[in-house]
Length: 447
View (spheres, rainbow, N blue to C red):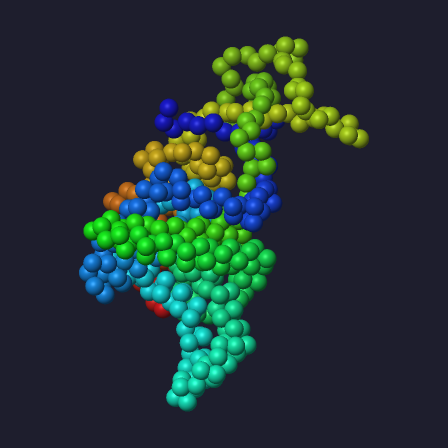
């Protein structure tokens, strides 16, 4: 039934009960998650996605240098999308939105080119500073350069830094941020040993990618029109997709160390899938403001005995806590009532446990819930409520919702790319609004 849901509530006070959680790095460490990354693209949907992306890349390469650049952009956009969706915990290969060729194809191509250039440009510049005409004609001098320890240190530093640059590129960081060694090294230090494990995994996968490239060339040499090039492109996507999965898993497990998202986003249930047990409380024990059940509850003598799995308290005479119960409420009315009474914590708790559609509540109610969620630092829920508020474009609250949402993405969620898209939509849709004027000031401040 629309507007109702089930909530886990305490049978004594009637408050919403929070599940026991543990940091997901403790539930399953990052290294323990890596072996399954090899199987990530091999599902039916994954293979179809690889085949579709490979077909697009193959077709674009027919159009010369521009086509090759666009094909690179499509590939990088795909890899960045895998990093982001894996960071969110998705198990599916997802292709990003290619509605805007500039931001969805050209910008990813430039970001990917810059991130991978970090692998070879520093070493090339060092070699250029050491090579002259005499050394080019002297094999012994060239062999000495190949054994130069400084060159190998530069290559090692590049290999260590490039994955972090790719992560920053995938999460919407600016070009200058990608090249900022202070920020990059600080992020690497926060991730610690898990980052080194990720780099080692990517190096190993890079060796596999070289073998896949050789197989791809053999496949392309078969000469079947389109099919040969398409098969080679599909083989070439497998290992980069797994590398993207590795970096996405690193963010999924340790992203809070980089302030990606909120701390509570990295808490997983201690007992996933376990349902609460218990019976509704008696009418005289119900929490204030909650409705009594339609039928009288069983008498104490007739109530079921506690479950055998309950552990008796040790060295304590306090009574065992009552088991939680499931309470069904009319969420639309309850949330609206809580907003009217300025009881935003209750409105936020009810809203967060619901799956209401935007049309189930007035935009001003969605906006009020977003205000309460932001005050509680639940920024993901605030964004969800703001999106619902902005989904009614003719309502006066819509431009303000877009402005606040852009600020949350930029200042709290570390996603400047999405923040910019929100501001662009605000300025295009409501150019004369007060929110648009504030949005222009935000753009000017961001540079």
